[in-house]
Image 1 (cartoon, rainbow over the protein chains, first blue to last red):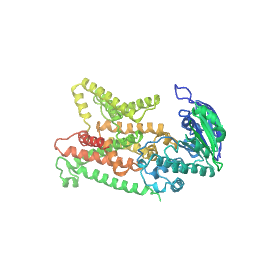
Image 2: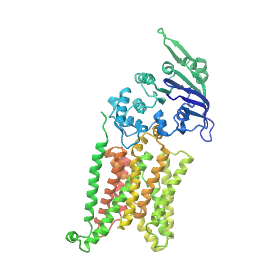
Image 3: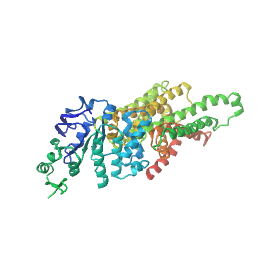
Image 4: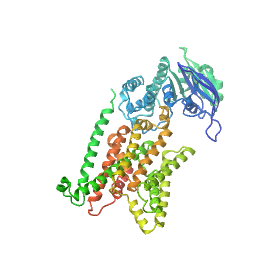
Amino acid sequence: MTPLSLEALQFAYPGQPPVLHGIDAAAAAPAVIGIVGPNGAGKSTLLDLIAGQRSPTAGQCTLGSQPVHRLPRELLCRQIAHVPQLVPADVPLTVEQVVLTGRLPHGSGLFESEADYAAMEQALLRTRLTAFRGRPFAALSGGEKQRVLLAAAVCQAAPILLLDEPSAHLDPENEAAMWELFGELKQTGHLVLVVTHHLALAAQHCDRIWLLNHGRLAADGSPCDALEPARLEQVFRVPFHWHQNPDGRVFLTYGH
Amino acid sequence: MATDPRRPITARLAVAAAAALAVTVLTPFLGGSGMDYGKLWRGESPDWEIFLNLRVPRTLLAFLAGAALSLAGALYQAVLREALATPSSLGVTSAAALGAVAAIALGSGEEAGFPLVWIAALAGAGLVIALVAALGRIQRFSSFTLLLTGIALSGISTALILLLHSLAGITRSFQIAHWLMGGIDAVSYPVLAALAAAVALGAVWSFRQARLLNVLMLGEAWAAGRGIDHRRLNWQSFAVGAWLVGTVTAITGPIGFVGLIVPHLLRRLCGPDYRLLLPLSLLAGGAFLVLCDTLSRTVLAPVEIPVGVTTALLGGPFFVWLLWSR
C-alpha cells in the first residue's frame, strides 16, 4: 500500500498563528495509529490536511510521492476515507442512503451500481447495522449515527481511514466493538488513523500513538513509549499511571 | 436487500409527467370568455387564432416559468441545506427585477422588451450571485448568514426599484407597476423557444448534480471527504439558479412562492432524494403555475388577476403554516 508521509507540515488559518508546526511523521498499512492530545492541539486540523481538505501553509503531506491536496479528489477519496467529527443531526436520509454516500468516489453516475450495493451490504454487516438499514438517520442516537458514518467510510473501501473521535458518543459495548473493528480493518490491510481522547483504549488497541501538543508532535511511538506518564502529565497537566493486571494486561489511569 | 431507487423514481416521474401533460393540454381550453369548440375543431376564426396565438403560448409560458422557478427553489434549498430557502430569500428575484425595471425605466421604450429586459434581469441576478460569492470568499458564511445577506440585498434592490419607479415618467411608471405585479401573457413562439432552451440547459445541469446534492445533505465536510468540490458545486448551483430565475423574471416579472411551495411540499410527500425531487419540482412547478394562471384568468373573468397575486395569496398562508408547523 502507498505510504503516507508528513514532511515539516505546517498550517495556519488566515491571519492567525500556526495551528500545526513542522509535523514530521510517516505511516504505512497495516496499522492502527491513535492521534491524541489536549483540546485545540491540532488533531482535527491534522486529519483535514491528510484528507487533502486543507492545503498546508508549509511542508507537505504525501501519499506515495504525490502531495495529497494536489491529487484529483475522486482518486484521493478512493485512497482515503475521512469521517469528520460533526455532521448535521437532521439529515433526512435513511441509514442505507447515508452508507451509500461512501460509494460516490467509485462512480458519480446518477444511480449506484450493483457493486455499490454489495459494498453497502458488507459495510452494514461489519458495523452490525443491518437491522438499522431502513431507519431514518435523524432518529438515531449520537452513538448510532457515528456507527453509520463509520459504515459509510468502510463502504468507501479506501485503504486509509481517518476517523475524528468516532467513539465520542458510544456506550462501552459499542465502543469495544468499534475498536475491534479497527483491529479487523488492520487485519485486512488498512491503515486507520483515529483521533481519540480515550487514552486507555488507544494504549490498548493502537500500534502507534501520535501525541500532539500545541500543534507540535510531542511523541511518535508505541503506546508505552509515547504515553509515558511524565510526558502525559506535562501535556495534559494531570498525573497519569500505568497499571498491570494479574493477567499481564496494562492499562492507563489519570487523576490525583 | 437494499431497495434500488431507480424503479420508484421512474414510476413517480411517469405519473407526474402524465399529470403535468394533462394539465398543460387541457387548460388552454378553459378561459373567461366562452370559446366555440366547434369553430376551434374546424380551425375557424377567431377561436382558432385565440387558441393558437394566445392560450397555448400563455399556457406554455406558465409551465416553463413555474418549472424554472420551482427547480431553482429546489436547487437553492439543496445547497443552502435550508428547506425555507428560495430564489427570493437570496435576493436573486429582487435583483433580477431591479435589472429589468432599470431596463424599462432607462431604456428607449421601443427596446424595453425581450431580450434587453432579459439581459438586464440576468445581469441583476448575476450581480447578486457574484456579490454573495465574493463575500463567501472573504469569510466562510453559514447558510443562515447567506440568507440574512439575501434579505438585506433584497431590501436594497426593492428600494432602488422604488427610486427608479418614482423617477420614471407616467407611461414608464405604469409599465413598471404592471411588470412588477408578475404576470403570464401570451408571448411569441420564438421567445418561448428561447425560454425552453434556457430552462432545459439549467434542468439538465441540475439533474446531473442530484446525487452530489444528496451527499451534500450530510454537510460540506462529509461531501469533501466523498470527493465533492462543495464550493464549486455551491456557486455553480447559485449561478444556474440565477440563470433560471433571471430568465423567467425578465419575461413574466417577479412571481413569488412557486420556488418555496412546490419543492417543499414535494419533499414532504416524496422524500428528500434529489434524483426524484429535482425533476419532480420541474414538472409540478410547471403544472402549479399553469393552474394558478388558469385561476387568475377565470375566477374574476373578464378581469384578470396577475398570476403573481394568485401565487402570493396561495403561497403566503402556506408559508405561515410551514413556519408554524416545523
